[in-house]
Length: 113
Length: 113
Image 1: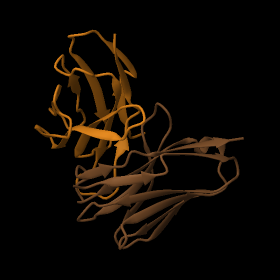
Image 2 (image 1 turned 180 degrees about the horizontal axis):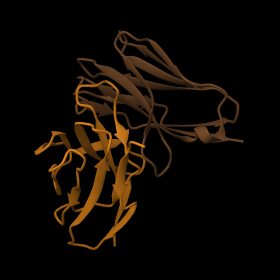
Image 3 (image 1 turned 30 degrees about the horizontal axis):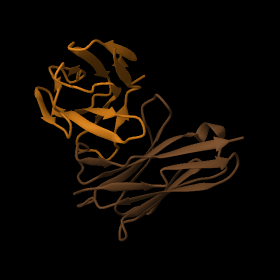
């Protein structure tokens, strides 16, 4: 079955530590996205990529980094520069020129301990 | 600035009752509007997608309407079930490029027996 997989489902980070969230899709979608969701709030765009080896900052990119070396993969690194990283992180993919919308992963909940 | 406002913020209804959620937007130019359902701790799942020329679309017990003149959309849920308890998110795109999307904060629906 085609889909988008995020791992791990839960992640704990110590102060000052970098962590990487995985996102893999087998839908052959061109575009991939990372969103952050805080309790009771809407999704906010961190980074997105429309093509391999290219990505753009979203609304809240500070303290995060990404790479897009393969079409299927779009990992997100939460760096120590992100002062409030505890949140629910969602990865999504879509065909760039389609109106079909996003396919979302099941999310990663990151907690700072 | 592109904005999407959803109302009410939260809603409690009894099982079997109908309800309507609202979405007002100021996104321009308009490409499409999507409604998603997000269960707690999960990724959003697409319910309906409407383009400028469509004013209604159904998906089972879910019916979305769109008035492009007044920039309003509604999601009507018929004969609610306990499994309808979730957050419902309205997303408006200004371009066929899904990266140019604006998310509403969502309406949290609770269906009680």
